[in-house]
Length: 270
Image 1 (spheres, rainbow, N blue to C red):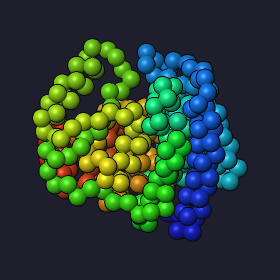
Image 2: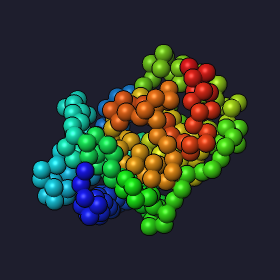
Image 3: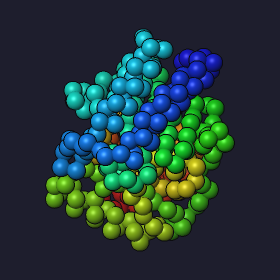
Image 4: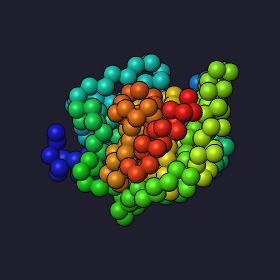
């Protein structure tokens, strides 16, 4: 494990990279977007690519021996090889569909794993100017102020976030809508805001009580947010209740008080 001084340096570097990319996103948000399709509804823009290049070049200059995993590069080459080495895992623009539509819920997500454990996290929404940060063992913050997960103990009073995902085949859609239909009677309400990383941060600061997503893009969606949730006193786990696996494309998060009940209703919704 790196020394705490180093972790503070890593966090400062990640914040710097996120803010530089955020400036690009903020400018692009109010301009005409040039959009490509990765799938039927999965989009990528010039801004995604520009921001990933910017973040990686900044961090590689500072930490040439570290490893790097990014959404656009990994999506292009189809490989994610997570090792024990310090690894920067980056989603340059989580919420591309929101970006394209001018819906201001998007972020830069930067996570650093050491020994495959999420250790430093930065999630920055440049449109709302909200910077979420966390270092393992050092707490979680929003714009420099400490944040905590909610203390809600009842599912029926909990706000749940999830996402529809990008697959549009009938089997996936039926499973997704059946699950949501089952959950609607168990919670106060459901939100789909279009960013896995910001949903995790919503758990961390108590705006949301419950979150799950199955079949998201990859570790870049969760690497930054997972640290922030845990440091805010929340828990991150597999929707089955098993341990969280950053490479599994399955995540659930909540405060500790509703975890068991949430896992049970998720199991019943399958």
